[in-house]
Image (cartoon, rainbow, N blue to C red; front, side, top):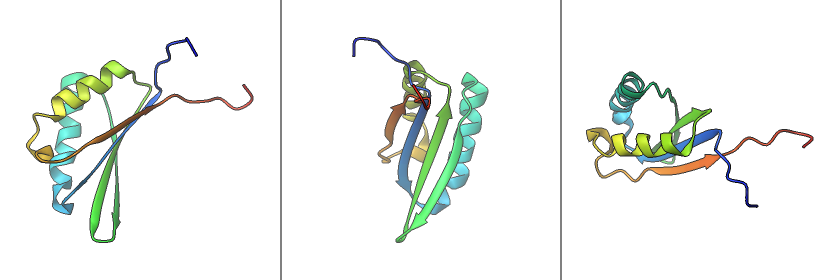
Length: 94
């Protein structure tokens, strides 16, 4: 496929201590204030671990680079391995 596509959605997930939630919520608020990029936050609590996932809709690869560059300077992500994936939406029926 030679066509260059832009993702519609970004998913960034990571495991942290459950008490990290306040710092992560503050990060999302600061990210929006600084860049206008609004993310949603989800959490899964299973087997003694907490996995958080940030989601971003209608966004491109440049935004992913911006988000990760800013996240690298956040204390709440020190020693945290963030996993990032970008997806494009497929419309049913072609």
